[in-house]
Image 1 (cartoon, one colour):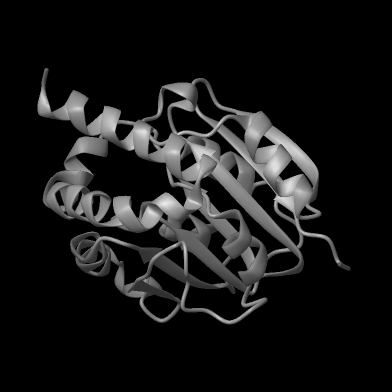
Image 2: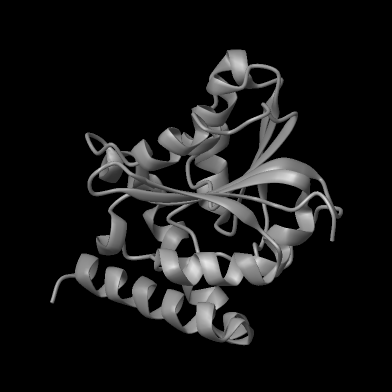
Length: 210
């Protein structure tokens, strides 16, 4: 079995376990961070030629109103964060990732024209270093969702995007039914399911009032 296949299986197993039992993340966080630190130097090459952000971008088209502050979680080398900044020209965008080497590469990748609006930070999505209601838009692409934290950092009425570049074939993947159920429990609504063959995304809105 190849290293790539082992990595993909480990990511899927970790996702399934953590979505069911978020407390297990404390045990799995370190190997996930090491895995993506190791992949960082080749990450842009690995994703070259693949329309990895198609479902994320399709969901961005439906975001209203335009956000003032956006958070891209699991940002990797910054591709999705740059999409957000390119679509919403007035928005401040923060890209956050657990893997330090991914963040270092994202900073290197940042075009000069975006350096005033886009920044990258190392952060654990299970315990984000941001205040309550900090962002109008939060997006995840191929990222394990920590639902309580997503709810906490979004402003009332804010938009959430959860995208998977390869749909159910993505190593880090959560079924749409599970996403909707977890978010509905927290009051999210206005769900829109998006497909870009094979990519999928779910767009949801946080309630204005608790």
